[in-house]
Image 1 (cartoon, rainbow over the protein chains, first blue to last red):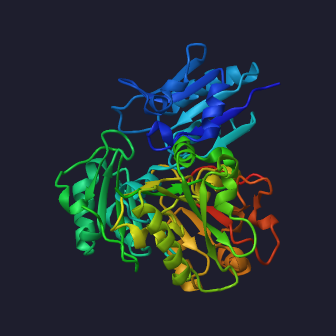
Image 2 (spheres, rainbow over the protein chains, first blue to last red):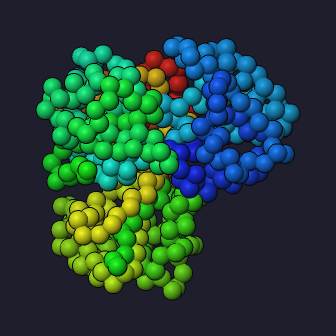
Length: 237
Length: 237
């Protein structure tokens, strides 16, 4: 009988923000895969490093970080070949995922290759957008407000069209687009309603009103959160 | 010294989907508050019932479920008066929240009343929208796609305007609006891309393609998830 494939959400980075379910599944698994850069530590693995022991087989899915085009199909083809082997031989395989596996996560590239052949279970995780609201100490949305999530690499026109329809606007993948997105936010008169969060829930987390953050770029894992709804939710310094 | 106020996200309902952090905070807290209906069990409390013991003081925040207008300001005023008393006397107070406290959660009504007086910590939780994607076994979004979250009580024109701008569309608070929302989805040619999820991760969970769900209304805690992006993610039966 084949093993089962798990996509395991591990949350935004604080090791205490993993779920009991994720912990239990990691502890009983013999094969653990995770995305990893070609230089340095895997972020997903680092969240649960204390729960992994030497008896567990690890499969790093090494993603070349210098390439603009991502993901490399070949990387996932090769990783899935290894994972398939373990599943066929009857071992469950856990794929560690930062945040939530199905919310802009690279796990979907594993899932789409293996879902037809094997039983899969996705364990949801806390996404960084939820963590960012907690860190900013400002609710994301209430009542009948809408939230829109906008990847910063989109062009200006696409972004403005999306910003217009929701009371709560979350920019993800901000990185090198920061200065341009800040201009767009200013052009809509929303700068004083925008919060900046970097590495939410990690020891080196930063958060502040965007108007106090005067850099031109930001880490890839940074988020801008704008609230233009009716509630009296000021940004804290 | 005053106590600290915690807004504690407990996830979508599966007791295993609480975080280690939420569990640790509950175990060391002497005062636990939670929203509760005037008739029946508190959903938030039920998620962590096994971790609460008799020595802990409980403060149910009883919300009259028969009233269309919600929340009743008076209910939160009175609950916060009690909570304030414990905080002033130096006890930490934990407010249990289903899902994530700052994502359409009633905790914000406690927070807005007490945030200026007391230290607050928000512990994020897994929202039901993340859980729904896991249950449907279909990713919510990838790459530079946008996600929009739309409360079903909005009027048709508002809904169509919001549906137009994103590749991934999540309807929340579906309940008695189901038939109308289904018509709107059909009018946009998206019925075969819509999934229905009810009580995600609970024992009585239901999930299926919307085209297979022929009811006129749904429970309040149900979600519709539409994916019209470019990825080959079919809905499973």
